[in-house]
Length: 121
Image 1 (tube, rainbow, N blue to C red):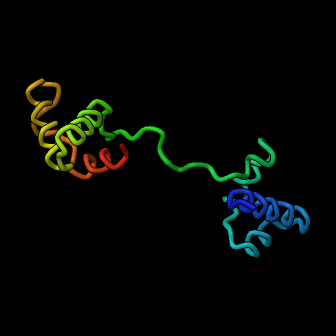
Image 2: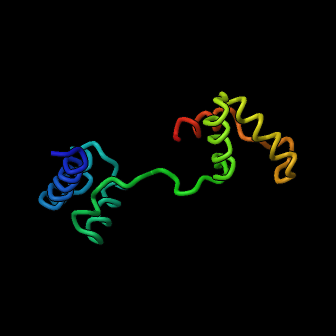
Image 3: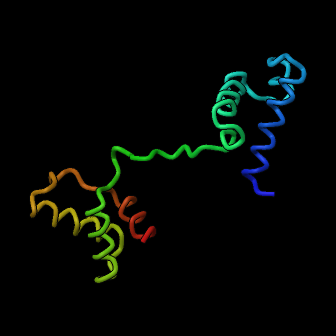
């Protein structure tokens, strides 16, 4: 049994237990969850049935300070072609962006984001 399926069954067991005893506060205390969590799960179950009880991703779909894809591509290109380290590639990209005047000189991506881009490639 997969972890996700086990979590769905646990949540379903909590919902059915609360329905069976009729006292939501007592069921929540027994299982150690907040009543707000219970009502959120119940609303999802009422709306989507069993698939509504699956865990949802909490990762943001778009991060406002995310490094633009064109910069990530340039860092990866510099790393692959010239075998540059993350900080060196980041410095080269910042220099290129300043020359192209598409970016302010003081606003560059951090070495950590350069390293993450290289690792993701």
